[in-house]
Image 1 (cartoon, rainbow, N blue to C red):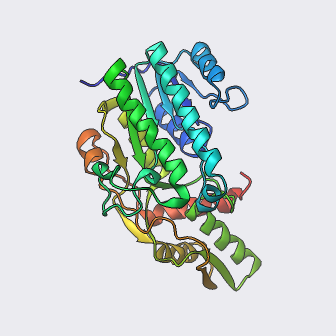
Image 2: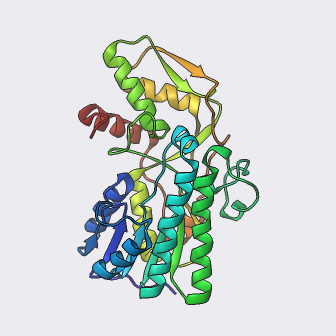
Length: 316
């Protein structure tokens, strides 16, 4: 039975000032939720148990949407495996235990497809999560997040905590992180192409061989899916959120270059890792359980993202 979420419920959104979180806030407000709290890191360091206890004491949430994460692209994951494991494990650990203690109505844990095994059969089905070790460069992050899925399931079983676990695919869109060291592939490519065009450069360098594939979900579509899951999904089983469409990094790079107006050469640095060979999700469960189907065409989403970067630049 679905737990009813009311428009007057107090909703605390960790990571609410971040990329995805800002769109989730927009979506909540559009649907009539007015009592939204966005804890900031300067006020609550969620890796510390005492701060999490104060978070629950001060904000008194009925619903917690836990989006906050320490995360980045392949380079950032490779440089920070210990920090990414600790920070993501600690935040979720303290927040889920705190949710049990105060008996929140709903706890939404946002996971990661980095939790899937490196060689998961495509399309990724939720039942495949335990059939192998994740891709090495992001395994510490992925395993920490996957452990939180087990924690939600265990707390549901023992304490009747209504925790759900969602697996968004790679996101993109306006307001993303465009820092070349810590960003994901689409914002990194957009920045490279736009800046190369502005400088008149004759070439750009892309990581890896271009042979890996990825699926991407526009951030506004993901925000709709997260709020829809908060309202309608109550199962202990994890749920993929994606578009169900796959593209190789090589094709993606040429597409971003064309849409950005960069006409130069693309060189591939094969000394850099490709990451997981393929990523494409089976999105049947989300369609059947909450009626979610991604609406934004990929080229339209890319054009919106490029236009946002052209206006705001990397430091926005």
